[in-house]
Length: 412
Length: 155
Image 1 (cartoon, rainbow over the protein chains, first blue to last red):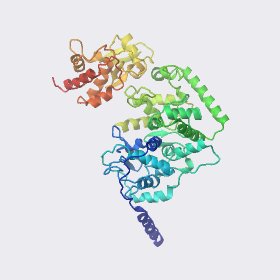
Image 2: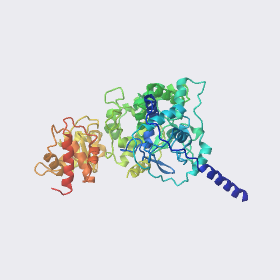
Image 3: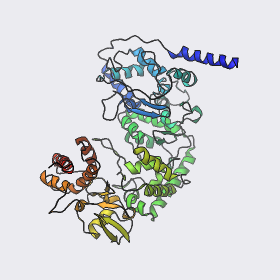
Image 4: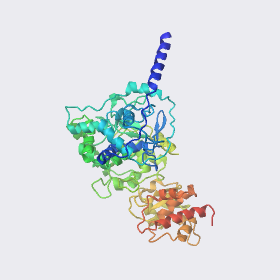
């Protein structure tokens, strides 16, 4: 008993000890930065998809307000424009660097790890300075931050950090190519790909032993990128590069949902870095070239067989016109058995895509599919999902009807 | 045989269940308001309403439409007695070539049946998937806003 009390006291002491950090002095940041540095910072901001959390729908760039639903509550992206009162206008490079590497804001308060500083911590001084230059040269927006609904004390984050935050800039692997290392640096660091593609434990930390094994995020399933990749045709570097840059690659599905946002950002990146990212991501799949070829060939064969078959009136009437043509022909779309959405463990992605379609951002070009919202009842959508799953050659999904019901309910 | 309820009238349709609704409306039922534009659900010319929602009739097979309520421009009123949406489009002279208009009207009708006081942003958002090549865009927006007024009982 005494020991337990002592343990508790000790724990609380640790919490109290870690709870507060020194604040970093307010500064008047430089009024201007070298043009090349700002440009570099912009590209890095795209790699980090900073806008994804720090720009609300229809809101001013980087002014915050985006709700991020986590299992612990809703966290709102903050205002990172250089507004001196509501943004980061008084932050020094030192304060910015600490936030990025340790998850502590200028005033010394812990940020929740929904802000992926466990990834950003790998970023070099030079790149952080470029990001700082980019942020500080944005249009300042006076917009107060929205409060979060996480019922945890900020101090609890200190314990989380002691357990899960591995500080330190990315260390290159000398046995790998420079391109691979560049990709690893961007993927593991600013790109924070694992934040969506790696499953998390009950404390919301990424499971290191299941890196890139696929995970649920914002209602979508981020597919596995490791050897368990569900992609019917295993990814090549070329296909991955095209996909990351344009959202589409031969023999692979069109990007949708949160990944479409990532592609939108990466489309602004230089080709060399996108290729480096593709090189590293594809290397996560450790299957041999022979094995990958065998799997891919079988998938292509299955796709051909499936499109030759007729017999589902909904598929034939709603999907076949485009999806039986394949990408090679005008107006043609991917043969569906090659779509990752059919092969992942949940029907949710496919249900979202059928219901809402795939739309490029307003005023931009991009992949496109019509929305079937309203055309199909929940029961009909359930039947179609079940039929499509069978086309993929995977065992049936459990409780498709329940998933569809959940999606319809969440929308209301 | 597929049973379709179009504008409150029941039809027994003799067609392959995979046939898109658009072809049945035009070829079997002689209802020519909905137009064939792209046939791929990309342009919006074929949009009609099903159970109150706007859908692309060119990519919706009739097999999914039994026991559901289909509404086309013919169901909004007649030449003698145009409904609010039709009156508003005539008032605003919103059609130039007119090919895209029936789809726009049905999309707008679905929006206004849910919210007759829809804002301009709502209207623009709803009509976003519709293409109009001759460019009466601002008149179309006026017409839809006006239809909302008429539905809310303003004269």
